[in-house]
Length: 301
Image (cartoon, rainbow, N blue to C red; front, side):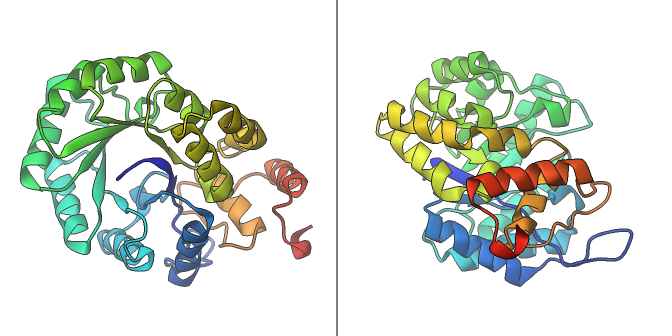
């Protein structure tokens, strides 16, 4: 169910006051979902890091999942971000994601608390036992301060509804260790656009992508080729869009990708504090790249 190019979709906001972005722009969000459906994206991941889940209210979080499920119409799976550093809160969000019709839940390792490997095992065990929904673990040490080790992940494969992991360590060694320890049924999904193709080459199953927000068809084409074993063809797509991977992280995600989408006329570049819009220098750098690639509307050039 979860494979190929899955977009870590942004949450568009309406223009706010001087201190913060405004309410969710539901119409813009629906248009973004339609953009992905038409572009061949294999799955949508709402309420992740790129979706600014950390600054969504509880009601907004559930509403974003609801809109995503409604507008995908079952055509591609919705993998809802439901993680928290509080186990009971993660269970709450995961339970509601299932009720709203999400195909699965993406659960980040607990952050700030800095749990041990045993603590993380018990956290995910509790969620898996509480909610019968396919679960993808999410390991991103640069954001959370903890690294979910392959040995711990292997222990978690004992729970049938823990079906995979989004691995965002950018370490092909750790990815290879996961593949060796967890078996072929366990889904290994890249959490870094840079490692999407290399992950597929060593036996992975897909990517949860930031870059796919702006070039969804190209990312889907790359993953389609890789899934068929056509790595020469996949490499051509990789080389074509590789520069965007760096640009999407030239400042804290999702500020750059929202700036790009605004230039493309897809949604506003509003982000919620403590994030802020990208600098004027980086705005010009991004605009030049989008222009070279042919992604800017005539009015934006």
